[in-house]
Image (tube, rainbow, N blue to C red):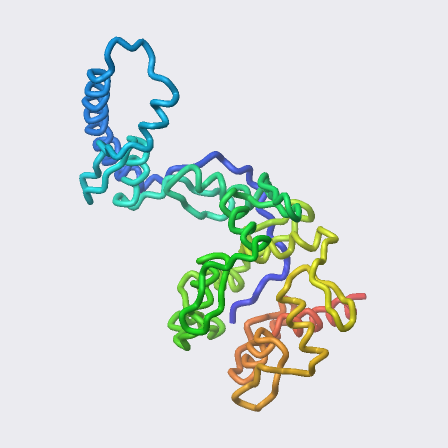
Length: 326
């Protein structure tokens, strides 16, 4: 049985700009060779452009901008034939074929093909959010997330589910929703039996058993296994609770928490155990309950080795050891 660590594991190493893996050096040599060919193409392209420009000492900024919007794409990928207007775009594209991810995060090990993606990722660890929403003041790590967020204020949900008609502001939210229409969960955890529809979700889940928590809060140093959990935690440092219950006035940081809370007033328990018929307000509680029937106890006490099906039960048990020591 694998025990799950309760302590936060803080990763204090200073983030390097990036690192290049040793085993990827061979692939990078291939990229350099192809770049020599690109230099020849660029020189020929520049000669043609200079020939067309008659007795002009400088090229205006407007001409450079027009060049980006030109239909001419002189830089062609030798692997797939895709063409680009600029040499830099082709260089970035070539990494797709080599499979290289030369930019590695020293804090969590995630790798990236492009420096821009790597820099955006590093903001997760640093907590930097330079992009602010002018409507509600919410901040984001990258401009794209801000643009997606602005759709909420505009009331726009352009991505609709073809199965049930539910709409979403972002395509990624639609994709995550679509898997709920299939019961297939092919990716199973070997430690506790939890199953997932996507391999990526299983990988994230496995961090629970390893005890690795690469995402740390810059305000209190609490650490988490997943980026999403860190994001939700950061809200707790803000006093803002925009979602209020109309029945009792209790407020919440997230809409999902409010929706779950409202079920207390209605008395509804929509999630029922197929084994014993017991019902629950939220799906997460049902999942924890199902571990009892499966006999799975993934949470182990480091003091005596006793195992539990739920993390809360382990915490309560650990307290008994503290009382005994006193």
